[in-house]
Image (cartoon, rainbow, N blue to C red; front, side, top):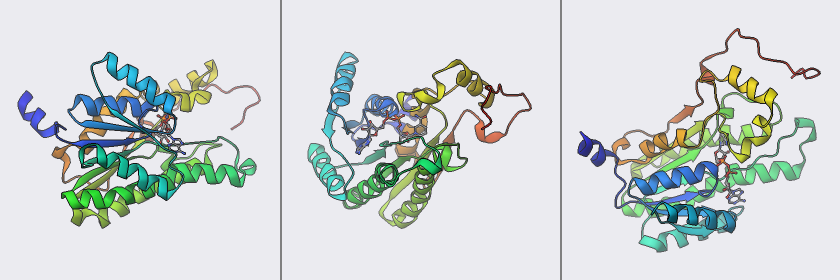
Length: 271
Ligand SMILES: NC(=O)c1ccc[n+]([C@@H]2O[C@H](COP(=O)([O-])OP(=O)(O)OC[C@H]3O[C@@H](n4cnc5c(N)ncnc54)[C@H](O)[C@@H]3O)[C@@H](O)[C@H]2O)c1
């Protein structure tokens, strides 16, 4: 049994490039890839995050190659792929975890806010995938996994641009899966719900919000990054060679419906 599963899900011999991989969710996913046997290349915008993750990995007896880049331009994405390919000569797995948000009502979003969010969440995902495609095609196949969001399905106040970019990533997943099926490249996405990270700290960091989440999420809590790792490993494993174009929602049951339990309402807040 153990060997049966190990053979199906081992990433031994695979090279994985994890964009945004020293972030909160990225760190957990990168560790999972390393534990599954992959050679891991972690990209991040911030060199300090790569340094912190390097210490964490070393303490656990794990290793990765760190590559810093701002992925705002298509040229930077192509350059990152070239540097990543130089590590082992191949890239079998690309995971896109880079993401940015500025929470504001629609009426207050500036063109600069709009450009930053769309550049990181959509443009960089599009062009990094485009740059990795010829590498995967030449080696006979590969796996691409995007991190979209629950907000691709239902939006929340103050995240209009973010939600639109994530809906676009969900759509891009299907386009890439279809266009690249002949190249044996499977493309899927994970749509996380609320994950307890710095990224979402403004949402959960007070008593009112904590109670709101406990009522709103059927599982009764936010996710932790580790809750997403097993599905990420499943979607990039050899075992799932026939799974493509799928968006897997991991939201603790939010999309299943709403209960009649009354959520606490903060005085003066109507939305
Ligand atoms: N945290 C959540 O609740 C949640 C929910 C749904 C989806 N997601 C998505 O999961 C992914 C990871 O989220 P996280 O919580 O780990 O966030 P995080 O802020 O910890 O990580 C995001 C990463 O994006 C990278 N990045 C930002 N701007 C960049 C740029 N210009 N160029 C290159 N890289 C850049 C950074 O390196 C950073 O490590 C994001 O795509 C996010 O939208 C998160």
